[in-house]
Amino acid sequence: MGNDKDINLGYKVYVPNLSENSITVIPAKKSGDTKTISLDKAPQFIGQVPGTKTVYTLLSGGNEITTINSENDTVNDTFRFEVGASAPQVNYRCLFTSDGSKAYFATSHQPAGVAVMKVADHTLIKGINVNSTSVRQFIFSAAMDKINCIDPDMGQIYIISVSSDGLLSTIKVPESFVYAELNTDSGNYFMAESGSSAAVKEFNPNTQEFVRRINDVTDSIVKLVLSEDKTKLYVLGSNELVIIDLTDDSIEDRINLDYSSPTDFQFLPDGKKLLIPSADSDLIMILDPYDYSTDDVIDTGDGPGEMIIFK
View 1 (cartoon, helix red, strand yellow):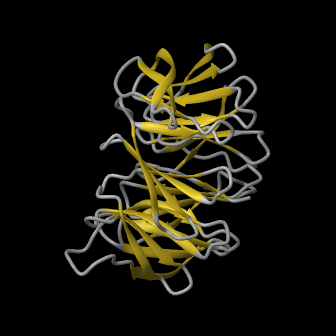
View 2 (cartoon, rainbow, N blue to C red; view 1 turned 90 degrees about the vertical axis):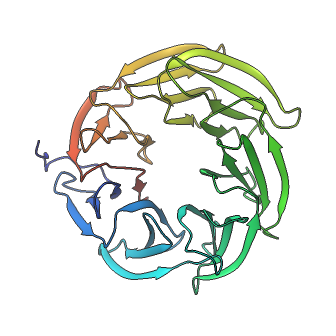
View 3 (cartoon, rainbow, N blue to C red; view 1 turned 180 degrees about the horizontal axis):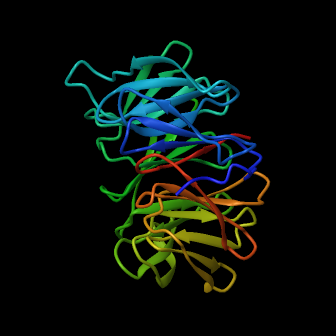
């Protein structure tokens, strides 16, 4: 397809290519002039250690983690993060504390499910027994003193204390869901159902009840993103981006995507562009946030996943 090298996003972007052993690097200037970081295995998830130039790359199918220097886009090291002495576990994703001292991992190790690492020396602090190996999202509370561990397969949310690394509570969600977004103002969760014409619903964890439901939003919901003022909910489906006005629960807009099978949805920090990777077409769509037209595309490797946009 070819990239327009005159595109200037203003921010460097890392894109893990989930179906090949690489990360695509999109420069801040001449953003179409991409380069590739080669890995030993396909990346499963990437995350930046706060306050550093270090990026953790969780390699697929095991417990190996490759660290990358984002200043010069070079591989530093590869190490194993092992939770127990049993068969090697798979680490699915991670979340770092704001000071970068600890990392929380969603892992296949039984019965922990969540493991805590000391970042300085990559050692295990403890495993947290949530008795599930299907945690798929980590979300900080408003005060960043708790972590919401989202487990759609089990229909549960595990609340973990950042100070003690202890399991504070388990919230049972009475209906199925595939993705959650926390409203840090109200403490409620917006949750997406699966399938075609899927609904989006709001869950109150205190009453353990759903307090609103918006039907027929879109197909195969991938991600939910609340606007900063909490008045809009962006819903990313298999072929479209739907914007819900939360003041009256109306569908404000439906934007048909030029390329299908999106895997992520992020605004640039300055809000001037919106980036959406397409796994089917191996590219990043660059959308204008005012009319949601696709201004440009940037080619990636095979199967682009969740991005890091460096501020």
